[in-house]
Length: 279
Image (cartoon, rainbow, N blue to C red; front, top):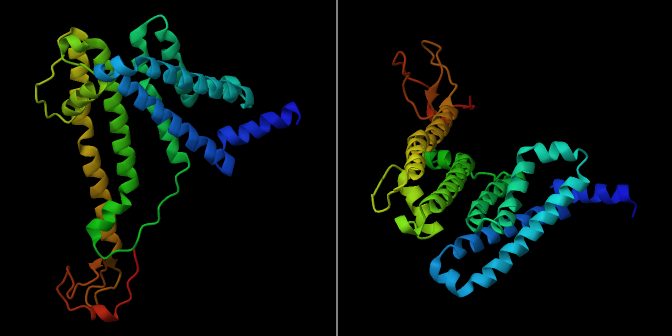
């Protein structure tokens, strides 16, 4: 196989999702990312770290080596390596491997590698749009139609609380009650939902600044799922309005089971004999 054909073959597998090999590569990469995050989170728990520190270290360097090879292969087979390196995912790919190498000199830097979770968003490139089953319940159908948007929203919120929790863990540490990344993620969830139990409170100035930003973000995102569901519900209700015209005022836009015109009160045709078409 020539050098040119090898680069093209690697490009199709690594950057493409339209082939079985490309889909398998992306799925394998996502599994590796999630597995590395699990190792990272477990390593932050003191009891587990004390018993399995060496195993976690080898696993982390193994994942880092794997992601380093993947990053170099992407640079090698990309038609425009500089454009890839400066792109959003190119930067994320680089940030996914740098923290572990930095940890050789600055041990706490390893926990910043939680930013790898951003790369899991690639899963939406290979997911097929699920066909929704027809249902007479408008509310249930609206929720189903908004499922993908809500999934993306909660995935983004999940990524956000993991990153914020990891940052506050590095800043505050066990001395101020943030004994592990899961504990810090719990604080981030409580703070971003504006519940504020008060059992974990940042003590440093930087920690308080992060807490303030987290609370402001919480107020900003609370209305998002409500808006998504409301928009889908409104669209679903409008799609079930009958286009039959009132025999008296000739206006349309009635509900499919309406017996009388909502504008003039005149009697409409029998609902069982109407021909309705979505707007």
